[in-house]
Length: 159
Image 1 (cartoon, rainbow, N blue to C red):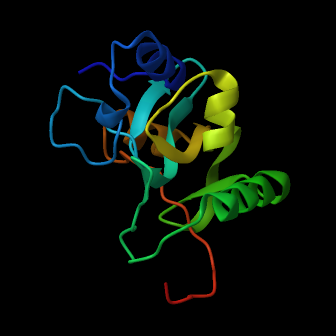
Image 2: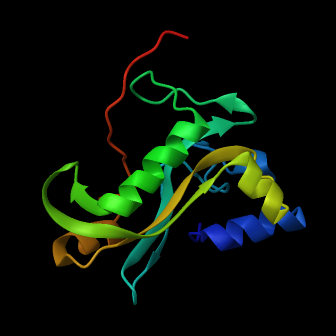
């Protein structure tokens, strides 16, 4: 399957050619685009990888991440904005030297989707990551690095 850009996915959903339910994390059907954490598009000329940094709701229901955590959309927005304002740095597996930085960022909240006249069936943070580091870009292109991973600190609250 050819990778799709965020705009291509949004256009397909808006035209009705792609169901928002098809744009979900970890879907086993290889014909459907995966979303959460998966790098959907890599622009070789600009060295920018595009994909979901985090998906916090699917089908109106909270997503439980790999660590058993749930992130509220408002918290995701605040965290994404703070990160883009202060750091934007990318590191391999959250450690070592900086190998890239976020150059494009939008949190697709329900309000943003409504304003755009779209319904992705999910709420999440979509990013474009510029990767000037030669070895890291090669790993992205070779499929070694297939996804983004966000890190953070928070206070656990029982739901």
